[in-house]
Length: 241
Image (cartoon, rainbow, N blue to C red; front, side, top):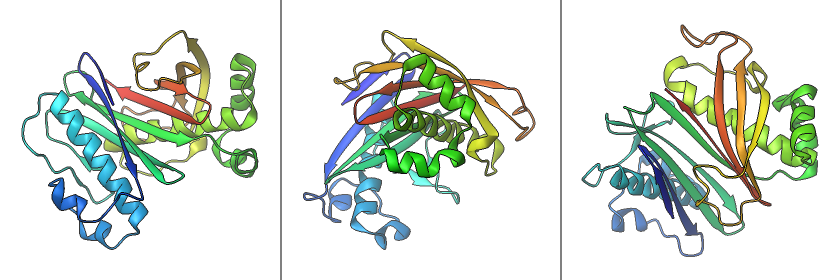
């Protein structure tokens, strides 16, 4: 499944673990890095699904050829010079779902995408203090009447997407508590509305940096994160222009 708007492209690939075989890399002409070759079958299947989504997005963007999207030393996907991209994947039961968000460099300097399953209530309670503060949880619950686990899943995913979007510029690890969601804007639809047919809510958040991370990536700077929520998953994205 795929969607495009202007110079932004979103592709999704589904892969059943029961159908996966390591030979699929050769059949799909996708390079299998040694680090992935020695990983678990689930990790291999996730990598394959993500690279297939990336290849589909590249074709939609007009990039010809069978590109093999490698990784840098930090594990970030390496795209052709004319585009920026981000990959995310999640396991649901015996299925791997991967997404790739891609944009031409004329539209974005960097970007990040994140796909997450909604946390259980127990997991949300265990990680709450690592992900957000009380004001963030209250903001989401008061605006959208989310349950605590859904609100935390959204905050977690938004910050993951921002981390990916900022990494090429900051090249340093920063914590969930170094950024804060400061506003929530529900929408009737989002520009990715075709992506999930069972969507229940969508919109965007304003996020701010609580400390300076790099020159130009300074305390108080704000970013926009788009989001889609279903009853089972949250998809978020951040584009930096």
